Length: 157
Image (spheres, rainbow, N blue to C red):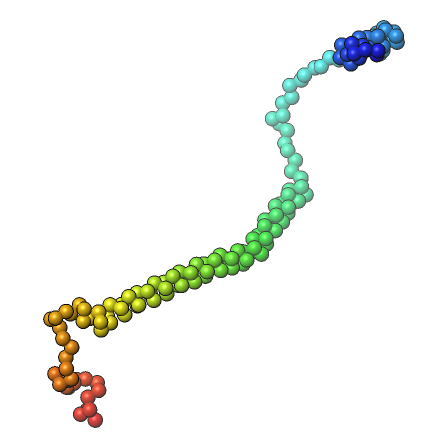
C-alpha cells in the first residue's frame, strides 16, 4: 500500500482479496466435500382435516374466561375510581360558568336600574312633561276614601 491506487484496489476493487486467495490456494479448497444423500427431495402430501375434531381444553377456556372477567372488573373499578373526580371537575366548571353568568347579569341589572333611575328622576320628568304638566300644589291634592271592601277599613271592628 504505497500509494492511493493500491489502497483503492485493496478496499474496493477486490484485487487485494484475490491476491490473498492466490496466496492461500484455490477457492475450491475451502468447500466441504459432498456427503452421501445430500440432495433433498420434498414430497407434499395433501392432508384432509375435515374429520379432525378439535379438543376443548377446559382449563384453558376457564383461564381465558377468568382473564377476560378480571380485565372487565379492573376496567370497571378504574372507571368507578375516576368517575367522581371527573364529575366534580365538570360540576366545578359548571359552577364557575354559572357564577360568571350571575356576575354578568348582576352588572346588567345594576346598569338597567341606574338607567331607570336616571329616566325617572324629577328633572327628567319635568323635561319630558314640558309646559303641559305641572307639579300639583298641596291644596289641590285630593285623597280618596278607601272602598268598603278593603282589608284595612276601620269600620269593620
